[in-house]
Image (cartoon, rainbow, N blue to C red; front, side):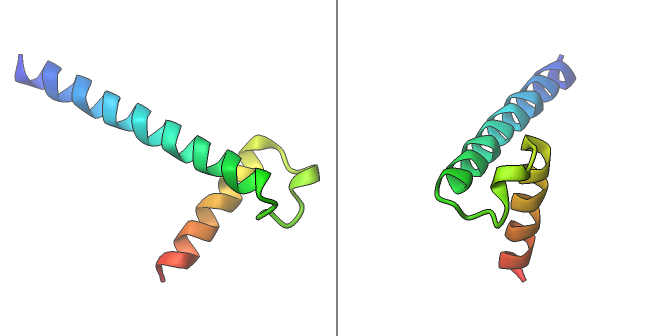
Length: 58
């Protein structure tokens, strides 16, 4: 039973994190923080946002 609860909690946390990431990516794009956002797909923007975040943490 606790495994089911833990799995549901992990899924909820993952969903919330994904939503925050997507919102932040969208905000960054609307602020013009992506070099060539015009030609980027949504996936490319998310990958770029991930790289920016990783570089900021160094």
